[in-house]
Length: 114
Ligand code: FES
Image (tube, rainbow, N blue to C red; front, top):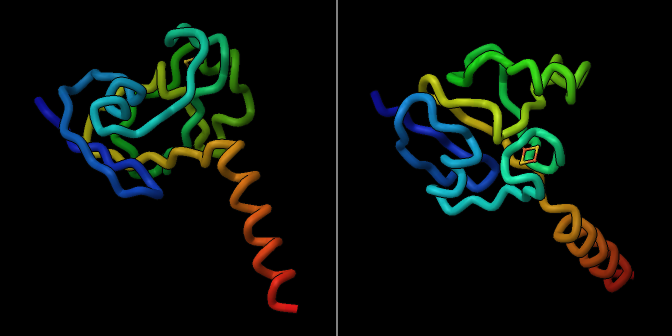
């Protein structure tokens, strides 16, 4: 069975087979999620956020429970471990470097107004 996954904030979507990891779905959708451990749940770079109430995402794995601890309660998951089990929407955090550049440009724009 196939399911649609939407990646926010871009709104990019893909349709993938049930049981596919969110990381694999992101790659298919052309959404970049950084990784260093090739999906072994050790680098913690592939974090995403889900709305746990209506998520079509699998329950957390033992590795996620160990690595994320209390972050799980706020919807943080590892995209390399979380699997798509139904229609789902996931939030991909902004790349830290892009976020820093964006903040700098916003500060510069505010200064230019004065
Ligand atoms: S890819 Fe490294 S923890 Fe998910």
